[in-house]
Image 1 (cartoon, rainbow, N blue to C red):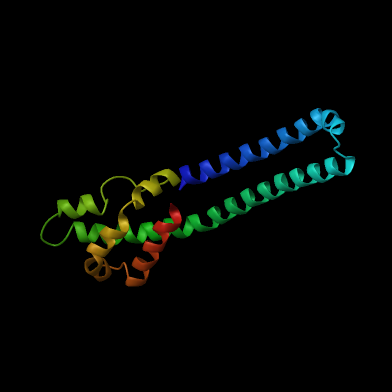
Image 2 (cartoon, one colour):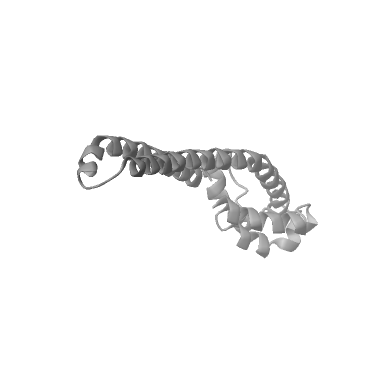
Length: 156
């Protein structure tokens, strides 16, 4: 989540900087363009379009950050429910299932950061499907399982 979000935010910031650079270039080289027939109205139209693109790019970035902030608590709650049920699958009444522990990623700390969460969910829909019956018997319902499969696509 984080790396994808960071890369998107980073590219948007570069796009804004490029737009600002383009505005500076238009101002610096406009006298040369006027020699080749560019009109003042052309300059105004070009500057307006670049400025509008900068504003729209910035607005999309803010919108995306708000969406991520709203989705994060729900995803963390879903991961918590999954890990609780998965832990019950792994540490069954007979013994600890080492294979299930590895596949369901119950060993280790809770994934606190967006990057850790992305790493945690990578390949998880297959494992949820493989252990679906056991997970649903231990509190991770079929609805939660379907939601987790959707979350995996959203997180990437």
